[in-house]
Amino acid sequence: MPLHDIEMSEFSNEFAQCWSAAGRHLTASAQGQIQHWLKAQLRPPFLEHLSFRLGNQLFFVRIEDEDQRLEVPGSWSGVQRIADKCKGHACLMPMQKRGGQWQPAHPGWGLIGMQSGALINPAALVSDEATPMTAWELHDFAVQVVRADLEKAGREIMSWQSDPHVDPSIWFVGDSGPEWVVVRPAVCPDEEAPLPTHLAQIRQSCARLSRVGHFASVSIVSLGNCLSQDDVPMRGYRLMTNYCGLRKL
Image (cartoon, rainbow, N blue to C red):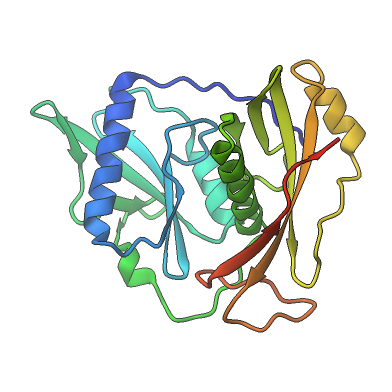
């Protein structure tokens, strides 16, 4: 299983302005329909630049400069990978700077399909179909729970990522320097996730930066659908969690 280093991708102030303008436009276009932002902070790693859930659909957005003068972090393959793993939509959002302001190059939401190049209206793709959450979604949700708890405790988050096949999931600033966290979700009826079998390899990889590591198990229960042994939570349903904090390794 791959291991995760702190990825310090740099981006310019100009890209930050472009990213902010794109986010504002999506928020305005949604008119309150976006139930949840998956990525709405300008922090590496950059598989996507922005991502959100609308109903039972997920959208992963890569921002680009229509005039190709702006250096943009990340890659097409990163967006396509996370969209495929989460069974979502890989989108491009070409932006243009006109009159000193960044704005979408296309009408409506400003989104086009990464492969098709056709305009995308996210609201039109939402359906009533019950859609199971993928392993990536469940892991991302668990990481968000742990990250929010660390931030509530006043910890500075250095890096996080949502790939369930990459460890550790989170780096943060502890009392004496960097510390890392391996996160695992547990889906009802399981009450706790098992420790990874390759823990020694994780420790060895992280040792050059820190020997202080933690394990975080987040138990997830979906309300509104009956779960059996083989069921998983449905996308868009209300989730409840049982998280008892970090377990030092």
